[in-house]
Length: 253
Image (cartoon, rainbow, N blue to C red; front, side):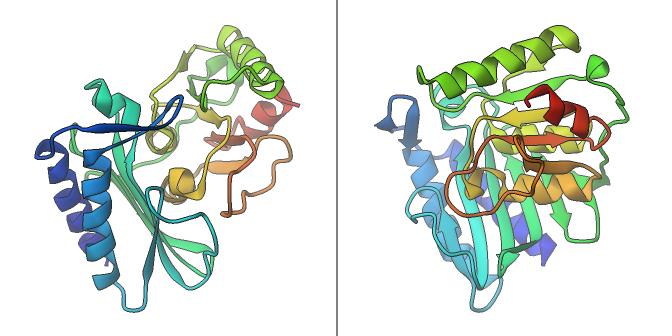
């Protein structure tokens, strides 16, 4: 079944090269393109054929509601602004869950041809090769991935960035990819030591969460250390190799 998901994501990725890029604004820094919508339509049709009785929860057309039953959780293009500006840091993100339990996941960057896959209890891979989080043990060694969230003047976002900046000075620097799914996968394969996210929706992190856990990492709420609940907008999240996780949470306390 994981192979079938991989092939479906690759076929969806081909649409990134065939669609003209028409852009609609959903908010100040939130956009949808014709490519997002074309991939969304394709996945809505193709994914339910993989597993009988399954449905699709997608960023583009479905309110974030009940995840009971058999559900594919999809972001057709995670990193839409990157796509608009021709930066090749966008990915198709697809997690599969049954009654809220993630069982299978794929994150595919069609521009770099990197395919991250995971199945519950069977590990994670990048282009068919097993991956694992890195062995950094301290935040002083860490390269930190950062997700900013939509630009606001809110005090919560200001406080978040103050702590991010402190970690930047303390460690080996930070990186902004503009794609939460890729941040999670880069943490899973050891390119990042940890990643932090101002807030996300289930379609942003479902696939990357399973890939990260199967690679030996952790994803929790940044304020409490509890596991996120895949319903509605999340509180800030922390992803890591596990070894620096408690120190990461303490840095934001």
